Length: 154
Image 1 (tube, one colour):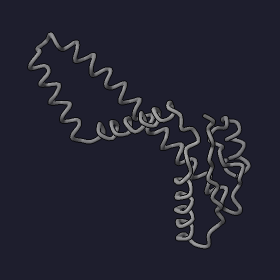
Image 2 (cartoon, helix red, strand yellow; image 1 turned 135 degrees about the horizontal axis):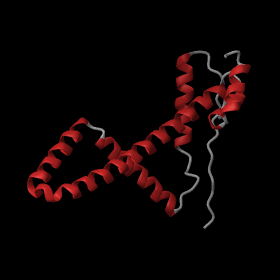
Image 3 (cartoon, rainbow, N blue to C red; image 1 turned 45 degrees about the vertical axis):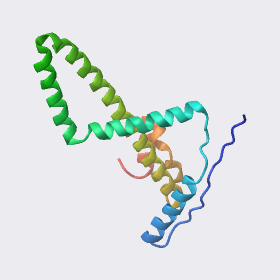
């Protein structure tokens, strides 16, 4: 089955006021949310499901009550199993720490990508802004320093 790529292309012009800017962003967001996903295969749907599960678990683990639950679970484990279960508990907590770290990093990566996309959209929409700065976060350090020097910053 051939896959069709749908792209939403909202047109944004420089607004006269801040409220007009927020209205334009809201309209663009609505237009983009109505576009069909570019890749709707099984692997992509599984990837999206994994992202949702990781977000849920990362948000749940970040709740202050989760720390209390973890402390009481560890104390209960040590009380029930004694020193014999200490190695297994250490192994479980190590795996849990690595997994949760990766979940949080994945969440931060997506948040950072969304933030860069929003900033790039604002750069390209505003008159007088340097359009070459849109997407510069992927450039190497020399390019970033050259862009800073050309803007007059040192």
